[in-house]
Image 1: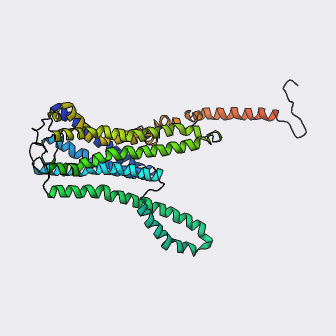
Image 2: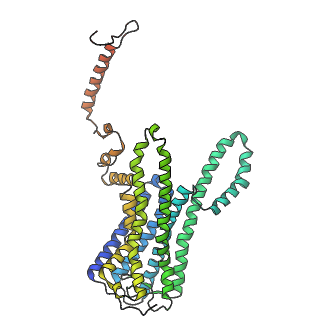
Image 3: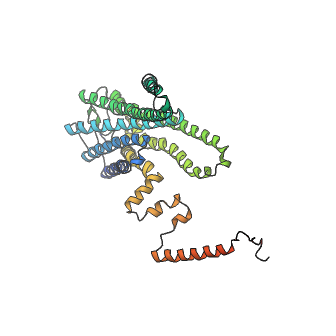
Amino acid sequence: MPAPLPPTRLLAAERGAVLLSCALSCAGSALLLCTHAQWPELRTRPRQLLLHLSLADLLSALSYFYGVLRDFERTSWDCVLQGALSTFANTSSFFWTMAIALYLYLTIVRGSPTGTGLLWGFHAVRNHIVAPKILTTSPLRSKANKQTSGRMKLWIALCAEFHFGIRSWGVPLAITVAAVALKKIGYDASNVSVGWCWVNLDAEDRLLWMLLTGKVWEILAYVTLPVLYILIKKHINRAHAALSEYRPILPGAPALQPRASVADKKLILIPVIFIFLRIWSTVRFVLTLCGSPAVQNSVLVVLHGIGNTFQGGANCIMFVLCTRVVRARLLALLCCGHCGELAWAGQGSPSSWQRPQPHGDRDRDKDKDKDKDKDKDKDVPGPGQTKPLLPST
């Protein structure tokens, strides 16, 4: 690795832009956490994983905010603490982002929320422990099978989340503890950061630790996310093509087209947004390795700072503001019910958009309906009568 470049000095405008990005990311992550706590019925398994990603992004944005605000010029105790927190949170964010993509791939494409190893273990438990109990209660076999199947699905899903949690929190924690214990976290002259601390500039093997504490997982995510989401999108497109054969006899099928198109757009945007935000830090990392003075370019510095800190805000836009169900509930909550009709107007028939009538108007409408019913009764023929075919006859 070439000799270190001179430190990158941050301008006030650059710091202000990155601090604003940190604040927006904190607000977005907090909003994701609040929606998860407010509406338990929206706690699907992917959103459970998104909860962990939001926690990592919130911790990352807070630690970056402190680092940019301090704009460290040397290694100190708070520099090491901030660098350790940002390293742990940032690496965890990579792991949770890939975990969500992997979970969706296993669930949608492979039909299993876990890997084959975990499923094998659950099948062994079911065959050797649960199955004998079911066989002994043959009159209730059908009901017991349904209950056992539901419990097994729940346990498999919970174990999948635990499996992802061990990897996505445990591996970054182990890397961060090792880096702090070996004194690899410290001042980095802002050439591979934007004011915050990361890998110590004086470490002889700093390239190895830069890779271990972030860059290798970031580059791995660049490759993994597009591949997984492309496979998911292809699988969904094949399912839509198979469904199109039956669409003429399914009256509700055309209504699913807008939702499907929105889901397709999200599957494309998730890896694109991730790569667009994170690529600038990789560009500055490569320029630092090459010893290029372009690493201190103001535009690159700002893009790097915003890209590293705005992940929580981007997730909030994608999974709260651009998710119809969550957005409608949020609007109804913020407007205290006054915007509820506007928020849910697209879900009902045109008759459901009408405002409620006053009590007096309701009574008058009821009287009119009664008069209409009487008129209809006059036109209905009796048992011994025949109704004319045409009014003129």
